[in-house]
Length: 160
Image (tube, rainbow, N blue to C red; front, side, top):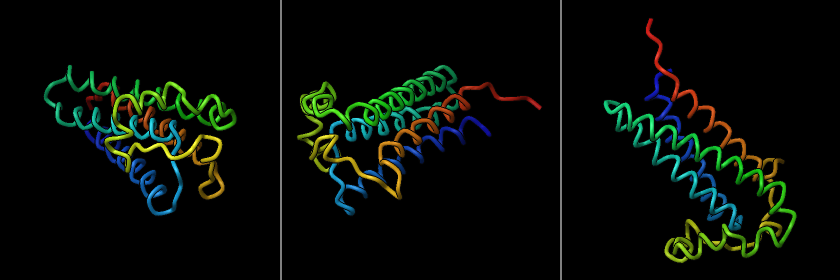
């Protein structure tokens, strides 16, 4: 598969993940915690970097830099979702007033765009399942898929 198609897949999966998170919040009533909204930010950044890689098809250095960025952000998403699942969702102190919550509040994102980045619960209180699987594990799976696609997009094109 071409790098452009893989970049498009990154954009669409990021938008899809963000759309599902917003649907879960605004339609199903699931309240996001600090780590949830931080992962939304990572999805937006991954999608944006992937969009740049699409735009930069004729600029190889920029395309590679943007794909390296998506790769690093996906690794950050895996780390974030793993920490969220293993620690923050089970330890009130690891969630409330964490550096992630401070980042979202002090950056102004939480107050400026509360429909997108509003923090409405703690990690422990906001723990929910979606189709029988912890919601955080869905996020972790998405970030793993984004990482795999990012790495595949970085591979040099084959000449036949």
